[in-house]
Image (cartoon, one colour):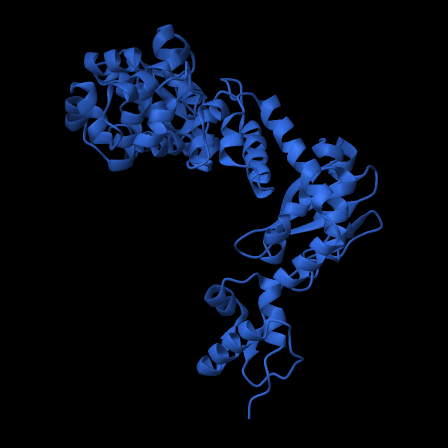
Length: 439
């Protein structure tokens, strides 16, 4: 609730927001010291805001009609900032004529300057010196690539930042000359372009970036990233990938590789997967009447062939314990992928139909219901003891090396064997079970 205190000050009652009687006094935007504020409980002052320090409430709740009375160009710059930075951005714009000139001429550069000032607790005097500097000096101060290209890229950007992570994404990209070079010739760069560069800095080409536009979202970024990853997993050359210029080109290349990959997946390939990775891992979660875990390498390859997608190329991730695949039979036929997070729990990774078709709402709801029907404990990696007695394996040379390693250590974990010999989880377990008995 906003009440009148005097012509230059807004009084905001925050009793309901914080749970005890209190109010905030904020200087109006057109006052001598714009947006300076103090907080009071009764007649006692309990806090005071420093330069670029927000009271912690949404800007609209603090300023009310004063916010919408701002000049439209200033209002647009404020709206481009993430909600938690809008107060600081407006105060920074109103702090001097030079600050306002920078904000209106290159809004995104100004937002990065404000972010830098807030994160580093820069005093107002130092902030004013910075905004009065030459643009390339500002880039250098922010730790960004110092070039005319960087300034042009920032000038072309018309983004609405939603989260702190959005700002960090921009900064990470603009700190790397190779990534800035990718952006030089794009007519405009949306947030999705920066997110794609952040996720796959070594796997981008001009055509891939042109598959995104200002309306693209993080979902589009994830779809493109997975298409590139899966197509590479199926053995496509980097040259062939770089030839794709549209999303349709990339999808067609992916589909051709799926067809070739699944045509080559005969029984002898399932045997080679067993020799390479060992037995198929156990499921992290029990199935249901309509969701069944795959149990063999043959079933994995058959699933990819039946559904005409590339799930068969996930064998390495499955063997490493990073991903597990289920077959969904109702309410529609789908392939479900779970991904293991670093702390051990399993979450939904992908849910796809025939030729990677998107699932219906009913199927998605059914999978989420199954996934959250109970909490599965993460499997604990077994401890390997040099005295374990188990049968032998075919790869005797590797077995001898593992035996010597375990005998030398006396006791070690499966993960240590994985790291030492660069093995998947199941291959390491299979070898551990075959260690000869020691006297």
